[in-house]
Amino acid sequence: MSLADIQERIASAEVAAGRAAGSVKLIAVSKVQPDARVEAVLQQGHRLFGENRVQEAAGKWPAFRERFDGVQVHLIGPLQSNKVNQALGLFEAIHTLDREKLAKKLAGAVQARGACPELFIQVNTGEEPQKAGVLPAEVDAFVKVCREVYDLPVSGLMVIPPVDEEPSLHFALLRKMAERNGLANLSMGMSGDFERAIALGATHVRVGSAIFGERMKG
Image (cartoon, rainbow, N blue to C red; front, side):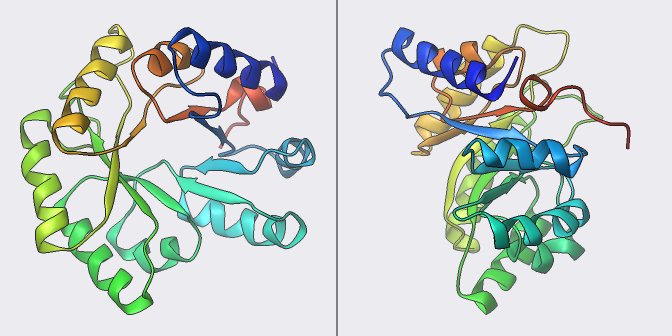
């Protein structure tokens, strides 16, 4: 598997779903990948990447941004409140807004900075106790709080379905929640299921090992 293979599969999935060509953005998940692998993907012209940790992104991306124009990095892992200011300087989008404390911290930092990354609310559709994310029953209220109390421009929802359940059920649920809240973006689908996610409206898919090879331990 390679970047070109994944891009081709995304294009085919767009056609099959009746979606416009290029309507799905591929986030190449570069977390814990060695710099040489990341650089190889950059050299092929890809510019959108996903990282799980603020510290890892801080150590990797400033140097790459100096060498490659147009790089965008999205945070797809949990964001601690004390890392908010650093995150705002590193990421074009944050996919893991999941609690009011974080919304409040983001709002203050965004106001001071005068700019806000694209924001996605993470939803725990499987209601898994070990997993981050807003519970489905609380999504509408949380979207409202983010917009009306904290003036945050939430643009979409994100989900990581339970590993032992059919992901399409969770993708369909996320889409319904986004539609009723007027949210245009859906961050859903990974290496094993992104075609199903595209069929159900994904705007951002997160693919790592199928592009870079298996992740290094760390």
